[in-house]
Image 1 (cartoon, rainbow, N blue to C red):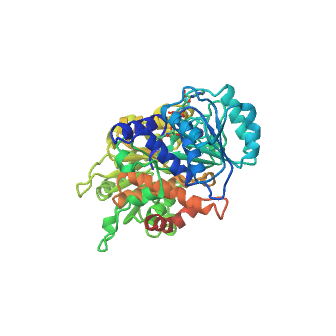
Image 2 (cartoon, helix red, strand yellow):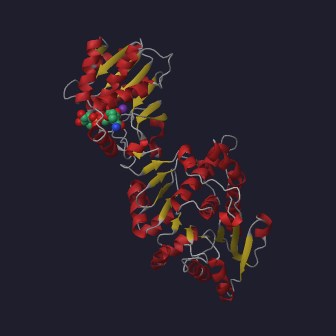
Image 3 (cartoon, rainbow, N blue to C red):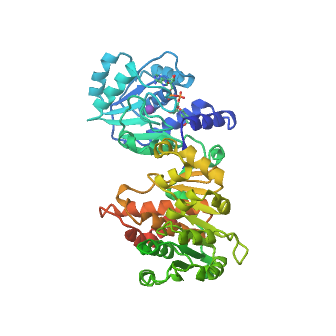
Length: 505
Ligand SMILES: NC(=O)C1=CN([C@@H]2O[C@H](COP(=O)(O)OP(=O)(O)OC[C@H]3O[C@@H](n4cnc5c(N)ncnc54)[C@H](O)[C@@H]3O)[C@@H](O)[C@H]2O)[C@H](O)CC1
Ligand SMILES: [K+]
């Protein structure tokens, strides 16, 4: 699903009108028809509150549609001066059709009392400043009425900034928001969850393929994830699903390595090998399918040469969870990223997480070695270390900062958090799954394991990160329906079933 905002709505509008030659009034009519589809047939007595821009125009067109179905419809017109063209056209039609239109704010309380459903089209993507005066008063009244009326918002609850989700002084609290063409970036702002109600994204007669060259940002949906699927050949063997090398876990943190390995195996990698302390015997018990490459941390030079063979044999290397920042960890990390091509002549892909990111932050010249082949999976604090931006700065400007970083270092960035972001600097995915009940130790390790496994199975880096983040969150979303806390072990046990559901449903 396309992800957009105020500027992109204007871009799509312009393209549809100027290139596809769809008159703007047709777009508005399509929007109205799509909107009305979501209104329960049994509802009656509508109050439609209209501003003077195209959001208000949508409101007048919706009023006409409902009226022509025989519904009781009343309109509150906030202003009939300086209306946009299409708003004026629909306003005039409503007048001509004899729909009752009210203008005085003193009449609003009675209108609220008499209606069952409020539909508001005050501001959409054109809101450009703090809401004051009469607009503020009307929105306050809608919110008071909303205690016992159903409130539908057209496109965006009036008062929410479509780009940032910021509340511009005051905002309508909708029960249902029916938005057009794109999932608005502002909806990702967790602070406004209660203002949006149920979100539905509707079509206005534009096929996604005819406009998706205009924007390269997506909100990940089940359909998108399904479309990423690579079919498995009947005659394939384990070598076709990737040789994954994992450097994770160290004394005191063996669990991290075990979780990465088990997630990787459960996601379907062909062969999984874990570089681990020679004294770690837990791996074989926890993940019998994985192999281990033992390291003597007291004398790592013993193993570095043998390690070279292991690297040359691998398709993808995941590095980071639980490795610490010791001299030895650094030397192994440096060795692992120093060879670009494997025995088959293919580029070895890298997934860098946790301490690998911290080591990278402190040794920036290593960025040179990871270009064009890596996914970095920081959480907010790790990303702050990598970029030098404060966590507040990143939160305010996630899209731009992540894209710039990915572009500068030619890597895929996956910034973990609510609506995890994945970008290569051009294209961007915002994840739609996940919840706060999965915020506990080991979750990141599990995500790393899933992603490196997908890369091993020849999914490209963007898609591996996208499927991985979606799957990881989706499993947790399903589990919280029946349990309060979700741990990495719970995710691991459900990976295979969830992949089946996503790819086959
Ligand atoms: N491609 C699509 O998705 C389509 C969307 N449609 C609808 O059009 C609106 C956007 O319409 P636009 O005319 O650009 O803006 P608005 O109606 O949101 O508001 C503009 C109106 O309000 C004034 N204004 C802005 N901020 C304030 C403020 N703080 N106080 C007072 N007045 C303010 C501004 O000056 C304008 O007069 C989109 O959301 C969809 O609902 C199309 O119908 C079809 C294509
Ligand atoms: K609105």
